[in-house]
Length: 136
Image 1 (cartoon, rainbow, N blue to C red):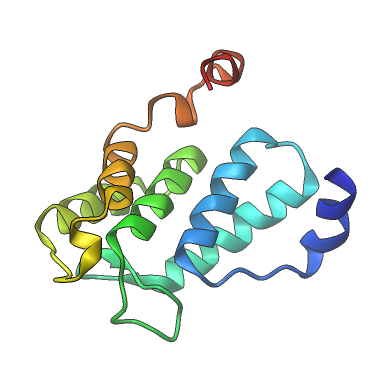
Image 2: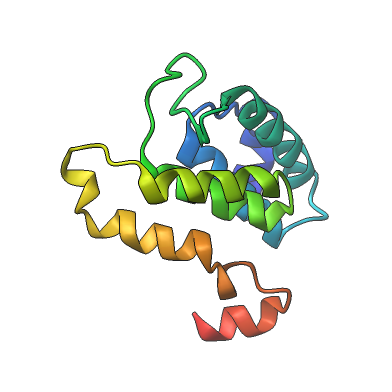
């Protein structure tokens, strides 16, 4: 896995909200790795471009109006792991407490599971990685 990451990380550009949240979360587990430092910087810069002042991150930079609660909650977890943009995390959580898409995602379990994780990340971003690993 390390060989794959080392070969692909320099050229990898992520522009999708959930992918950015996931890679930020992954960098949390390997903070000293060069790829993690690179992707933390890239992800935060991309997310800064994708922030919509209404209180959410758009799906892609060119899709400013498109948003999904469950993917934004994934961004929230990544941001909390990176200890970055925490005011935006609060605004995102407040926004999606009120926003309803009117589609199946309003009722989908993934949306509610991710909302809980966004509000209470617990062991997902535990300061004690050894305890978090044992609990999973």
